[in-house]
Amino acid sequence: QVQLVESGGGLVQAGGSLRLSCAVSGSIFSINAMAWYRQAPGNERELVAGITSGGNAAYADSVKGRFTISDDNAKNTVYLQMNNLKPEDTAVYYCNADITHYGLRRRGYWGQGTQVTVSF
Image: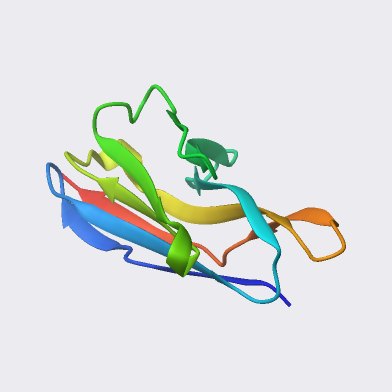
């Protein structure tokens, strides 16, 4: 069974920084890509940033230049460094992993979410 465990959310003032972590555990053959999504109240879940196993990263326009996604393949962990946070970044942040299991079955998994609140 695969689990994604997120940490690092919290309350921060505008202009501050937070670092989110998401660790993948369980029986997996490979991680193809990982990503961070967020969902604010009343809004749909949106992609914030993603990174492939080869290290290629992509970002939503709203976070480019402020957020950085990175991974540690040895630890099956992905990070999201968030700088210069704005109140509009307030949301629940979810980790997503695209995983191939032994036997080559492939599916996506979600973490439980971590709250990020940015105050004025």
